[in-house]
Image 1: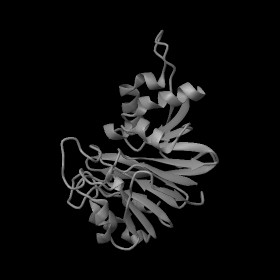
Image 2: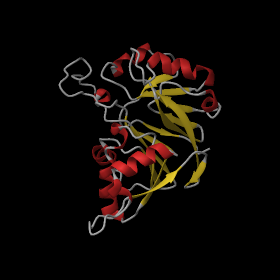
Image 3: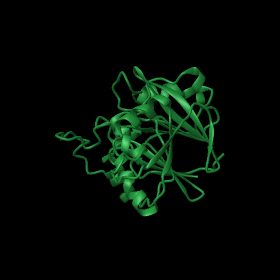
Image 4: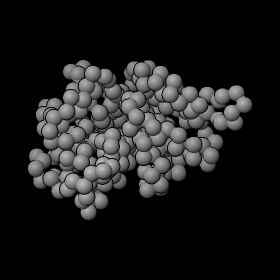
Length: 254
């Protein structure tokens, strides 16, 4: 199983429009962050997690030629507004792709992007996705996908565990029942927005503290703002690192 960080940035991306701070003006390519998303590749299948605002750019950069399924974490704009970029994959393969998410997330998507899920009469636009509500583990292309309920400020989001890997973006707390789903991980990619606090996201210290008892050997912080320079990685404890766009991992599927 190969995991690629397509984007590790917060909702504004980095550089942020109109900003010339040390990170936004940095020459380090690892400080250039598109909106948060990952790709999971297994047995020649591509599973996309979220259709970020920057999906087209991410797909071109990584040479992605097909998407076989989409997992949605939640319906905030930076995680779903690239959904129309799935059309390019449909034009190439004519496949209507299954997508998965919570009931609340799918309701918002089907309302805001109705044409993505059903053909309008005489529109000429074919649907791109079929929606599948999830609330329990399910099988996808030979992988066991475990949804992990998370708290995202005053709302909810879903993380996902696959084998010894978990992806927990956009969260400010992990319920104890969800912590029970995360034991035995080898790799955890988790929201670690910035050094200072935030009401809807873990900051860096919060993400590390929340997952300390899991004893994960490799923790990667994502959804990073322009407050966080990649060069600051020396401040992190052993076993914790910053994500960057294009970072890849190889793990056994279970």
